[in-house]
Image 1: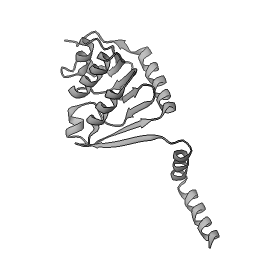
Image 2 (image 1 turned 45 degrees about the vertical axis):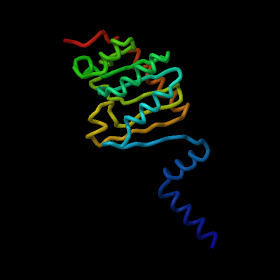
Image 3 (image 1 turned 90 degrees about the vertical axis):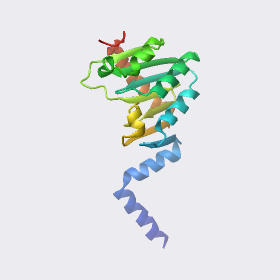
Length: 181
């Protein structure tokens, strides 16, 4: 009877190797993660909660960023002495509702990634340990109207990869000097 069960497991592993690799990875290297879905699924609150826990650094890459509560949480982290740096898509230079101007006016370094057709990232890296990512744009509509997802992942190695990517984009991004008129 045991050999039938072993054969069954082997057949499933052959048919679905990703499931078993993922399970194996999770057992060997536990990764804390949370997932949220919008509309009205708590994405904005989850981001603010993580930003409020930040101790040293917050790196942001965003395509669309008009969420006042998230911008205020970033500003609060900046006021606490945290290093907050933001890279935004070039559309945020002229968007009258963008948080780019709000953060810039508050002394938070903001850059514009105009190298790409669209800088479609939605990423925050907190203290080199936590990655926030997903399809969730940092906007009111993303929380209240859109079908989007957000992952909060606590994994230092993964965060390191995101920091490296953030730095690569920062190298070719332009310093934001206020909204284009």
